[in-house]
Amino acid sequence: MTEEVVGVVPHVLQSTGGIRSKQHTLIVTDQRLIVAQFTAQMMTEALAQSKAKGGKGLMRGLLAGRVLTPSDIVDYTEKYWSMTPESIVSESPGNFTLEIPGISAANVEHQVQGPRDEDSSIGFDRYVLTIHSIQGQHSFIFDADPQDMDALRHGLGERVTGQERLRPLKPARRHVSKRATREITAQHLSDETRLCTNCGHRVPYGANFCAECGTATT
Image (cartoon, rainbow, N blue to C red; front, side, top):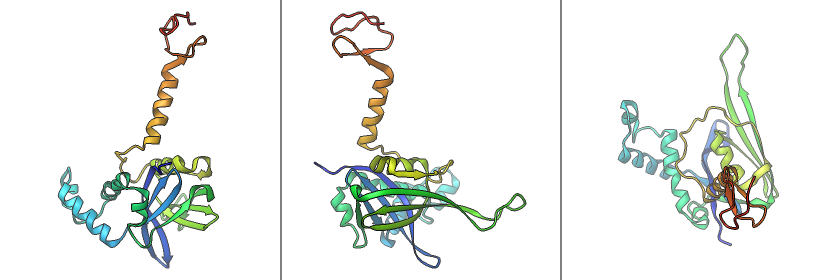
């Protein structure tokens, strides 16, 4: 069976000690979770792509090609939808994979860093994704946008638990996985049609008879 990319989660950080961290992209397939490094070279490429694209509005135009924005990262990581999983894995020596069947849980924990009370606005939110696998435990700081959570659920289903961010930090991605399209289409058909009790043909809601066998419907 051909392995299919079903979700992409940009802007994922992994601590390397102290305040240092490495940036990654999580690519979810129907067989594996690929942890792909977002290297310095990729940052340079993303900035060049941003500069070539330009930006709408004064501020976006000034930042294009100079500062890597969340939108730039999302745009750059769109490339993974057109790459094969094997080419993604081999893209960088630091990339690694976790087999989907070997992942028991993916927990998202909302943390508040620093003091926060009714009289103080000091402190900030962060979301930590911890993946429990037979290959070990891996923790990442990520945005927990609703679309990020959906991407994980496309591969891991109910094994993804925890709280997602109400207001996304990144712009919505343009790409929708083939699996998500199939799920949306199936839901749409379920909502808009029903099955004839005589022949099983789909009958639109509101129709008085089945066009296939002529049986009256109620």
